[in-house]
Image (tube, rainbow, N blue to C red; front, side, top):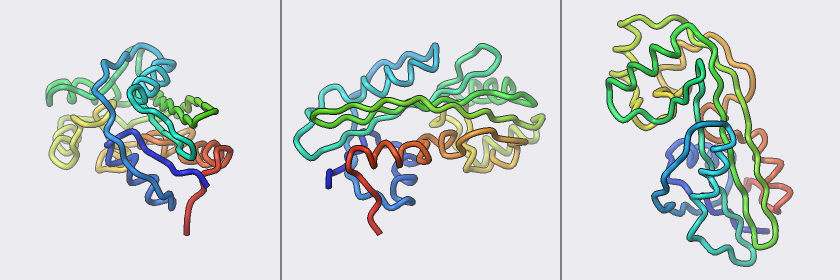
Length: 186
């Protein structure tokens, strides 16, 4: 059985892997300048996080990146509360797409995948924006929201993987990890 290494310090990615019974270690990626212009950039960014790590026999490295797109705009992690509000106003009452790209790498194999999910928000007024800013931490999430947090009550519908929106599409990742000899442990 191969050993899984998550090249990410994202609390959400760590939580998803733990929730579904994976035994893994966390590696802190080097700071890389991320590109956020297209869904394919998620793979470019995930691959960049793997740079500097040498894979050894029996090791599987996993890195991922998530982007939110709405109205032709890329909404990464906001840099300020004002930008978070701007992002949430853009998403208000609209359908947007969330893309997570992940890369699995072993000594002799590489698997890449991009997963798309459509999310529709209810209209958000100033009251809802203030609730999100008060109860969530929008500055550490792509698109300024976490579907698993308070903001989730403002999601009207979702088409696709819920866990993709959280940051790691486990429904797809399970089968790719299985191909590489990594399974959950009871």
